[in-house]
Length: 298
Image 1 (cartoon, rainbow, N blue to C red):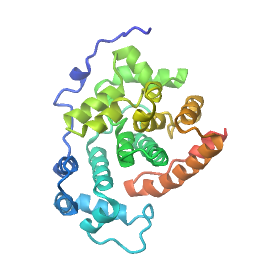
Image 2 (tube, rainbow, N blue to C red; image 1 turned 90 degrees about the horizontal axis):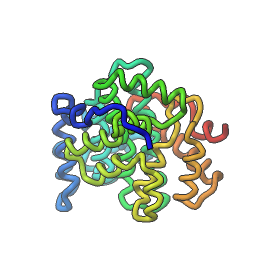
Image 3 (tube, rainbow, N blue to C red; image 1 turned 90 degrees about the vertical axis):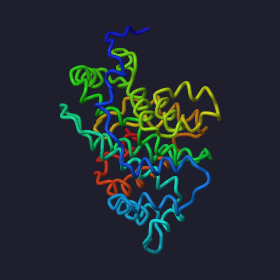
């Protein structure tokens, strides 16, 4: 067993002065999403009260991602057609995207992190739907937010993370394993703590906290298939990686989770690549230069 060589407590790193606040509109939507007695009219109010968010939501629903034959002109119509859960999760990610800092840290690129998160989210939702997991939209949000603590950790612990990033590149290992060795916790624990501080729904907190525990989730069978989709997505290559170090682990996990072969995986990756290319510009992100299909055929 590895020995923890640094006693930095996560609570000390994420003290209250460090944590950014979510916009009020996102908090209001999250609170509404946890109630069963509200409909599109109630969700419309906090969105329309935030002109920037309202514009983003209308742009989102009118994109080719949904492919509606006519332009959607109102927020309430958008909520009725797309669903409050999808709109709330989109608003949540927009909110997180706007408040997470961009640390000046060597080769780190915040847009690359969000590129990775988007691709993982699209894959998690696509897998969840194919497996008929309830509330596959939550898998999208959980995968989008799984790495949201990394920029904060880079900002607060730059020396330690420089060593971790260098070791990841040299040894081809997962960041989470290196973090556990150095700190006794990883960025999944950090992101889950951040999600709790923001009072995100408990299901999100769990998806985020367990995204580095694929083997454990696969061992739980059908009860944990949603979490396994998010954890499997975390094994996708980073957009900045030349080589996919966790390819064999991903393929093995995919086959165990879905009872499908690599031919089916190739179809899945083609679909995810297409949706990523459609979705990325909506979030002002570049389309990844290398497709998942490209990594798979190497």
